[in-house]
Length: 312
Ligand code: DGD
Ligand code: CLA
Ligand code: PID
Ligand code: PID
Ligand code: PID
Ligand code: PID
Ligand code: PID
Image (tube, rainbow, N blue to C red; front, side):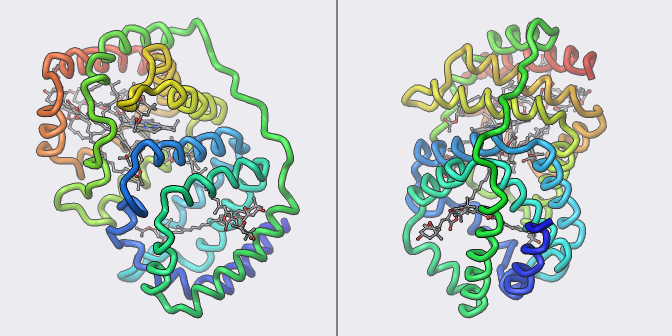
């Protein structure tokens, strides 16, 4: 297709730049300017809306392309192969073309809003300047091909299941865990801190398992889960806490999503995360909330999971 061909040209002009970027740099975990959690949540919300509007089949292919690209990483900077670099660009270009232009620009504008204007120049200073300019020039040509192939209306909203066992169980889970949710400091910057003692390549392995799980999920249920998060963000209070009803809808949506993939795929995520999250992290989280609320939430979760497993 045209976007695939354009991605090859983009690769010709941008792979040198890709090789110069230190993909393992911890700086990418930092806020790109002043830490502004509520504004950042707004930017994430725009990405969620764009993801919910995208063609689920193309999202799945983009996830598969990323998984493949992680497999061909080499060198100290963590760069993927030339072929996989092109494949990721092509897949993302097709995702972008599957949503109306305004949804993409809403992401751009909201991310711009939390990004210090000095960030681009600083990033450029870490690589060979002319290579960055060449890559940007090629991106501008690529985007014209994407725009030419872009839809003008969003895909249909998800079909949300109702009256299922997971929905009923999600109410019990949410009743048991909403007090815990209200105890958590959602506006803290602790969630941006690197995991103690873990390197980027180690963390990437766990992310890869999540990508694999995402690629196997039912596309309609993933879209429904994204829509539920978007609605939940719309009802947050000043401390970032969503309403009880929207929290319940998120739990129901995520339970159905988990049930749409094999148990072993979920356990691969859990086991790889358990390998990088040590007990100092979970104990620290626990120390900041009411312990009785956390224990009640945990009981609720371990009951809920049996219902999910039975539908899996
Ligand atoms: C936890 C889990 C929450 C940990 C929160 C930190 C996660 C940080 C993730 C960082 C991700 C970095 C990438 C993000 C993206 C960056 C992009 C650039 O507190 C365990 C041990 C292992 C815990 C770590 C693994 C967590 C995996 C969670 C899934 C991954 C989700 C993905 C996250 C990322 C993004 C999502 C989009 O399981 O867990 C606490 C448990 O710790 C406590 O241990 C459990 C035992 O495993 C269990 O066997 C049992 O003993 C239990 O139960 C206690 O404790 C007992 C009874 O048996 C129960 O019936 C009940 O009564 C209970 O007591 C009541 O207390
Ligand atoms: Mg979510 C999970 C935040 C958007 C899909 N997400 C998580 C949690 C964290 C979070 C609270 C990971 C850390 C953790 O396990 O803490 N997400 C979060 C924010 C946003 C967002 C702030 C921004 C809008 N997510 C989002 C979107 C999607 C997802 C758009 C795609 C539709 N998210 C998604 C999945 C999962 C998460 C599939 C998880 O599996 C993971 C999670 O919650 O795992 C348990 C602990 C969790 C909480 C504090 C909240 C849940 C409370 C439960 C139901 C009860 C508590 C149990 C116990 C006390 C602690 C957990 C024990 C553990 C072993 C399971
Ligand atoms: C400017 C000035 C003009 C010239 C110009 C110009 C530049 C415009 C630009 C630009 C626009 C632009 C846009 C970019 C957009 C990037 C969007 C990224 C989206 C990320 C998402 C992430 C996610 C997910 C995902 C799916 C999940 C949801 C999420 C589901 C269903 C200024 C040059 C024209 C770069 C969507 C993918 C996992 C949130 O206009 O004179 O330069 O760049 O998890 O969805 O699960
Ligand atoms: C524009 C203007 C509007 C019209 C429009 C428009 C276009 C927007 C577009 C577009 C946005 C867009 C984005 C693309 C992004 C591509 C990103 C590629 C990333 C590749 C990576 C590869 C890799 C890896 C990996 C992880 C490793 C690092 C690597 C570690 C730690 C402008 C059309 C709406 C194409 C990250 C995955 C293995 C490098 O808005 O008027 O057209 O395209 O190895 O991580 O090692
Ligand atoms: C233990 C001991 C026994 C008792 C027990 C026990 C506990 C086991 C547990 C547990 C398992 C477990 C699993 C959990 C799994 C969470 C998985 C989260 C996945 C997140 C993903 C994120 C993503 C995306 C997304 C889609 C994108 C890709 C991504 C596309 C196509 C220890 C109690 C049985 C919590 C997939 C969603 C946006 C990466 O066994 O005695 O306690 O928890 O962006 O894909 O866009
Ligand atoms: C298990 C054991 C196997 C069988 C199995 C199994 C099950 C795994 C499961 C499962 C995993 C799972 C995960 C669930 C996670 C739910 C997470 C809910 C999060 C809700 C949030 C709501 C909110 C917001 C929001 C953003 C705001 C904060 C809030 C800020 C900054 C165990 C079946 C495989 C259900 C985050 C979105 C508005 C609070 O593996 O044997 O069954 O379920 O307002 O952010 O303000
Ligand atoms: C213990 C012992 C067992 C019993 C038990 C127990 C307790 C475990 C606990 C607990 C785990 C736990 C985890 C919590 C996790 C909260 C995760 C919140 C994530 C929030 C995010 C917010 C954000 C943003 C956002 C984007 C911004 C950055 C942020 C930028 C660029 C010990 C009870 C099971 C509470 C990700 C989205 C706005 C950070 O296990 O016997 O009690 O709690 O602002 O992006 O700025």
